[in-house]
Image (tube, rainbow, N blue to C red; front, side, top):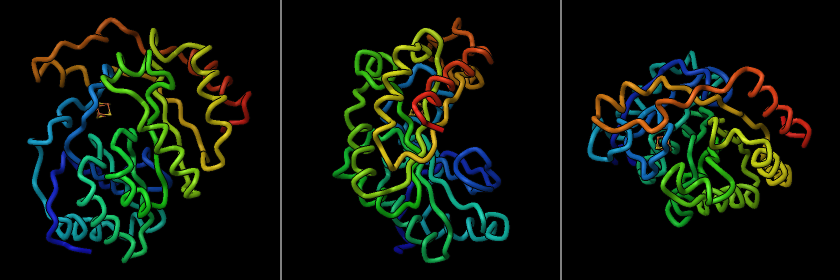
Length: 241
Ligand code: SF4
């Protein structure tokens, strides 16, 4: 590990329970090239903002929580953590030296030519598939999902454990035919250990207002419990848990 490599941090959650197994130290890295309509952290998108830290400073902070995260681990999230691949690699190396389980929560948007070294170092990849088809992915996120699907293929070839995440947005991804096609695609991958269908919510709406940006989903309701249950059933019918 090179402790002097610097990166930009959006925020830190020291007792996270939603981003990987067990209690985790979740490091939200600053910067994201995507422009998801439903982004709940639009303030994390600029790579110029956030707090500058060295990998050594981050690791020292992680280790102060070691008794609590020893059976969970550390998750690099964002923003898009692989937008700062060298910084991510140093933190992952430091965690490995201290025998801490690591996960990367990524959209897979960063090309493998840059992202692979960090993917190789992590124990688990939380891969957020925004949409399987580009006719939806491009308007929803501003980019193709080509790199995301290539990341999934890479994890399969490397036998890297993956948890899939997919946000259910009414009028966009909450569509039975699309969900069925996504589930059919995912069932072919042995690296996929878990799938998480996350209901769209508007908890970040105030951040869009604070940034002076129009929030296009202001009139989109969160999915109902029944809609989420039906979406889950589509995945379960394909053997995805
Ligand atoms: S990938 Fe995440 S941080 Fe980036 S724009 Fe989409 S929701 Fe926001």
